[in-house]
Every structure is written in C-alpha cells, then in structure tokens.
Image 1 (cartoon, one colour):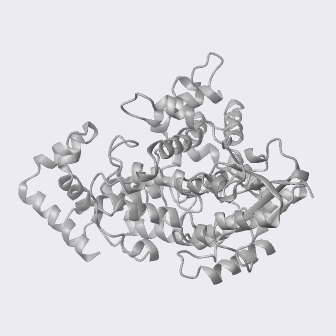
Image 2: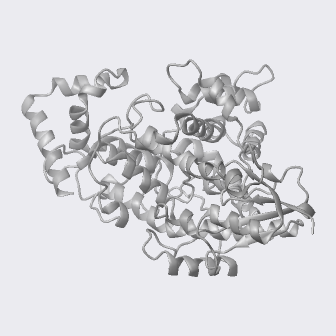
Image 3: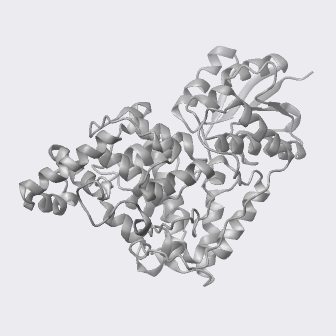
Length: 509
C-alpha cells in the first residue's frame, strides 16, 4: 500500500478549492475531518453554532467524496474520539500509512500553535498552506501597517479596492468620486415596510441527527435549536446569496444601521456564517455585487457599503488579529472590571433594545452589526464590563464568530480594550442614538427622555458616567471633545445625580 498525505480539513475550511487540496491527488491523499469536544467547549458555543458547523462539515465530507476524495470522518460520538485535533491527527496517522501532513493555516492563534507542533510530535513533514480565501496576505497587511501611527481601516480598504479593482472606473478612481458612502447608510426603518426574509432551511436527516447530538451533549450551552435555520451546503448557501442579491441588497445600504422590534434580519444578507466557514467565496460575492451596480440593478451606496464590510472590514480585522498576537485578548485599556450581567444569557431585562438583541441572539445565533456594536456592545462598554468576558460571550453566541474576526471587533472596536488601535474613539452612546435608529424606545419600560431616576433609560446616566470615570484616558481624544465640553459645562449637582443614578443601576445588576 502506497504512502499517503494526510490533509486535515478544519470546520471553517469548508471550501472545495481550499489551498491544502491544490495540486494534490485523491489516490495519494486522505482527508481528515474531525468533530472534537475541545473545539466545541473551549468556550460554551451556542447550540445552533455547534449544530451548524457539524452539519456543514458532514455535508461537506459528502461533497468531497463525490469528487473522488477519500475522507476519514470522525464524528463526535465515535467511540475512540480523542476529543482534540492533535489526538485525532495522531490516530489518523496510525490508521493510514502517512508520509506527510498538509493543511491550510488555521484562523486562530490557538489552533496554529497546535499545528506548528505536529512535525515534531508525529515525525513527518508538515506543510502549512496560506489561506487563499482572503484578499490580503499576512505579509501584505504587515507591509501596509509598517511605520503607520494609526491603522485606520478606511485607508486599508482603499488598497483592497485597488488590488481587486472593485467599484473602480476605467481611470482607477472610485465609482461616484468617493471611496465611502457610509454617510448615506444611516436611515431609520419604518415597521410598515415590506422586508424580505432570508430563507429558513429545513433540517434534513443529517442536520436532524446533529441537532439531536448537540441537544444531548451540550445541554448546558447557551441558545436554542428550535429555530435552526442555517444553510449547511454550498448549494443552500448560494440560494441565500441569490435571495439577498435579488431582494435585499438594493436597500441594504440605506437601512444597514436600522433596528426594528420583532425584525431580526431587515435587509441584511445573513451570509457571514457561510463566508467565515468557507461555504461561500468572499471575492466572488463582492464581484457579483459590483456587477449588479454596474448593471444598474442596485445603488452605489448599497454596493459600496456591502463590499466595504467584506474586502475592507473583514480583511482588516484579520490583519489586526494576526499582527497584534495572542495576548490581544487580555488587553483592557479602560480597566473595566464588572462581570457580565446574567441577562446576556437569558435576555431577561426591561431594556427593550437589549432584550430584543439578546433574545434573537439566543434564538437564532444571529444579530446584525449595529445590534452588536451599539446595543449589546455599547451597554457593556458604558457599564464597564470586563472586555474579556464580553469577548468570550460574542465568541460563544454567534454562528459567524471565529476568534480572528470576533476578537478585534469586540475587544477593539466595541470595547476599546486595545486603546484605539482599531477605533478612533469608543463607540459609546446614550439612549438618544438607539431612539434615533430604532423603534425600541417607544415601547420600553424606561423613558429615553429622562436622564436620572428609576424610570430613566439606563444608557443615559451610564454614558455620562463612562465619560467621567475614564476622563484621564479619554479626555485628549479629539473625537470626544464635544461631549467632554458638554459634561464640563454641566452643573456639579447634575453631574452628581447622573453618576449616582449610574451607580445605583450598576449595583442593581
């Protein structure tokens, strides 16, 4: 029997053309796919997130077999499952006559550290292939970042536009004369508008078997499986991509920051889980969006806003993650120490904006970016919640959350834990922003117009208390000059009332 190359395929590498398969032959390769306890439990991932990944893996294994590959698939409940990637690679090397290991680089520091030890552990050569699903290589991001005092996404995004040619005219200038149309993408939505709904995919037998497994094995993990709705194959993901492009993209730009009670999806794509696990190709998606703009099917603000999230923001946070290193998760620039409130795990709070965002998160393993940044993230920031606890919650509860993309978004952008590497200012706001961009405040138990007292919106006092208690670290930030001027002009008794109201609320938490 001829010797084989072992090619592990990780749960976020579900692309048929993943780089580890390039130039490899089915008759000399064994593909290893592993459902392991350690990856499902290093944080308590949402039940629907685990079910999505395991079901997508099982369907992907079938697709690979149909293309002639030999797939050695280790299910979670296999009797001899070791529970870890390294343990399963070791067992696979015993089962097969392995002369080398070949794998696409992992997306997280934690997993890369395991892979980098395999050559010594198994005494076979290990080839780590770059992940070619991303536009910017690690080296390109490092080259762009080198020597810069500020690493602002906007300027990196322009480089990605130039590299891809997306939304550039024949002279290489940005379509419409501007790189960024974010100022046009902040309209509140009305509840009487007819909104498109994403496809809710019904579980097939493979998915139902996974749901039963997750229900039994991870009963103490957060979230529900009752509304499981994810695409779990390439074909299903492409169907949702088509649904978004044809029915929602045109209005995505206008309403991407809007929030409505009882409407979890609005005009969002619901494609990020499929992009991050490999079921969809990011660049191909962006090219089709650009083509729709060029064909007059969608407005520029919608096309540019969507493309920016993928080739701009998504690529940028990956670059930051790998550049800053594994200690990034422990940073806490504002020295926030409060524990995460229980309502993040049960949704039981009288603050309607939070109960809506958290409730749908627990039900669907999904919330859109403004709910994450300006509701759950904003509250945690102004309440002084430990950013590492916030990071772990976001990593647990969202189906699209892998550490490379989630950690910079949470600790850096949302919680300002990195001191401004990503965000030029903390994304803190009072209830006024929420009232402007949503309909939540009209039906909330709290009054968004009141700043102090038991009936006042807690975001109001917490916002001013946040500025006051962090003045030594934030007062020099020029983007906060106006709110600090407003704070310093307040009567001292008003300042005391606001801080006392914030203190009383935090004690009740």
